[in-house]
Length: 407
Image (cartoon, rainbow, N blue to C red; front, side):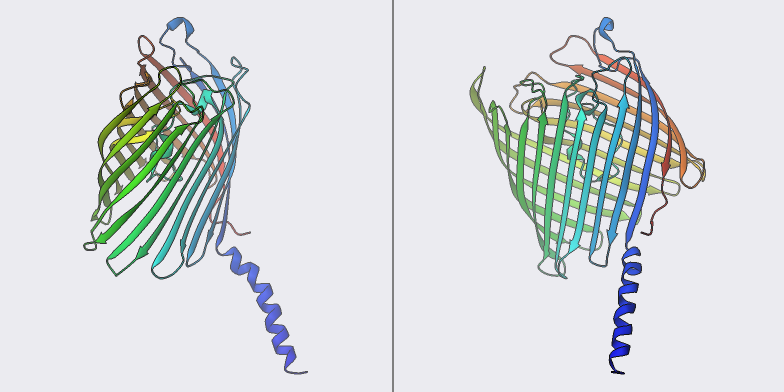
């Protein structure tokens, strides 16, 4: 009987301590912000008589949840946006977002990474590419390359993507990497070859070799399929890529990649036909940490799916600079410019696009902040005569909880 008491006490102590141990690796960071914005040509109309000079208001609510153990890091980031444009009453009042990431080391040699995304937005907002890099997944910006530049209110776009990666070490310096990707778009009202539903699948594998502490090389094949849901376009591609990751210093690193692919394009509908396209691309992206800030850049010629009804080729320059002016005041500037055209030369949705953003954020307290900024957007669409631009100013008051938070 006496021997049972210490065991029971130890078991109770373990149960009591378990929540505390869980709290040490579980972080909650609630967020809330109200914002007002004014636009000079919100719909990017090249015709001055149809320019939409309007104001908008929105409330953003979200929770950033993280779970961390020695072998696993998980993050889930759900958000909801409530919005109103008084002069554009048919814009959906609510938008939803969900980002998720899992990094798990299954064994000493095997690691798994999964990134998933979902958003349901009005096309009045969803079809304009931002200049700033996505904070949740800044190193792989492909999910931000699906917009069409068509500003249509009262239509809803639902986007979802999943990107799993498996890496296995064969030796201390050499390994294999396998990956897959899925991206899909759905619209409440589909417009052929303008806002078209699609599915995109890609899978591939790389041989990876770490030459030394500063250099890592990779090479391998991949296959992909782009298909519109209305069956007007099916594009099957086979390609290969070569990559070089270089850490120049502890504060500066870059990734270089070159790739080529051969695509078989099958068109159906009003203009049926088939074509074969051989294309080559390259990308250099990097991050430079500064004493009081950071510079991130991406220069690329890439191939990616688009709701315009075609797989597209994008030539892009993108840079973002964050600077801590004082302990409380932060400056963010970003510029993004690209040229897009349909792979194989068809489609008629080719366009040039420029976006510049400038913002300041002042911390009123450790959790409260006020921010404001200016955005400039310019676009030249092949199907429309002339160019269009929009000037935007905005002001925001927000709350961001301290992290990590105990449960």
